[in-house]
Image 1: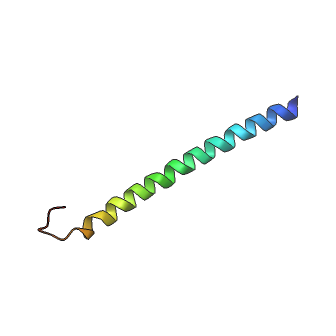
Image 2: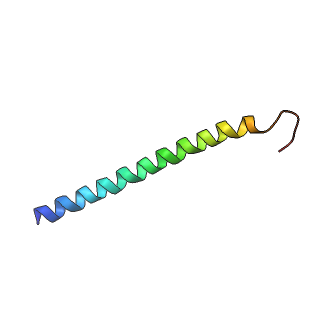
Length: 47
């Protein structure tokens, strides 16, 4: 009983960790894409 409960808890914390990690990576990718998207458009040219 204790083992299964511990496993469930570990699984939940692991999924939460993966979720937050994915959010972090997605956020960084979004920042980088906006960072790289600005210089690709030449000045004076509308996108």
